[in-house]
Image 1 (cartoon, rainbow, N blue to C red):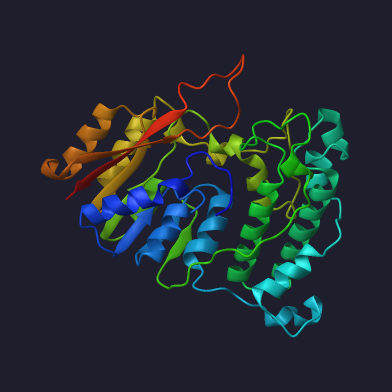
Image 2: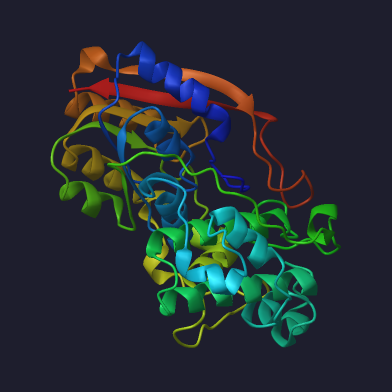
Length: 357
């Protein structure tokens, strides 16, 4: 998954795999209820696990559907007359979408400086040309789906490709809580769709659920992999534009507000990003899920105290199996140090807390 994302574990996949191997955790059923960009869930699938990947955000569901649930690269025979070729492969469909002219609509109106609302607030999330192309492609995908020219698997794979393409040309430092006031080199490049790296294999599924609600309905499973938010940042506010592109704007009025064009996020604000609520949420989830092995990915600056982590895991698992594995890596920076933001250090410690039952 080629997106800039807080907490993205792409660089840590080898570390996670090594810990699983060291602990003798073999492929079986795995649940990832904070799947985000689905980097860990798709890697677990690649390694032979039957994975349930879930999150409360719609864009995360799109990634989980495309990279975890979908069993193989889809095709769409019904699009041959539209694409203008006997080739109904995903590559041919992406090539067709890449040739579409821009059609200014919602993203152009609200998130580029040439749109009416965008001009009022000076929003520079996308160049007018890229915003219009995002609008055009998203509109076509919605139309194809409504007309049943593509199935749900094909829709979500193509939408994942659009989300990734939009992120590559977004005029941000990696999160959408602010836009850069001048055009960055990446933002000036034309939007281009790329082939998604779909992982072949059956037996996996995606969901969009609250973590506790999800695990409470699942039978016994082998591995619970937890990667909850570390801090007070609400992902609904930091990634509102990917969320909007994932949801679409075709079923009713979408209201934006403020300098950055936030959308309603009441249903996706997480207790895991609230210092006074995250400990109780963690304790409830660990106690509710019927896991055999648990691996928690967290870092040294997380808002859940380590004492709480140790007490909870040892209380629900066998204390003799409890371990904390550590990796130091370069910090993700959404911006540079300045008057209003100063990072604690250039490096951060990532921990994997493990316990068995």
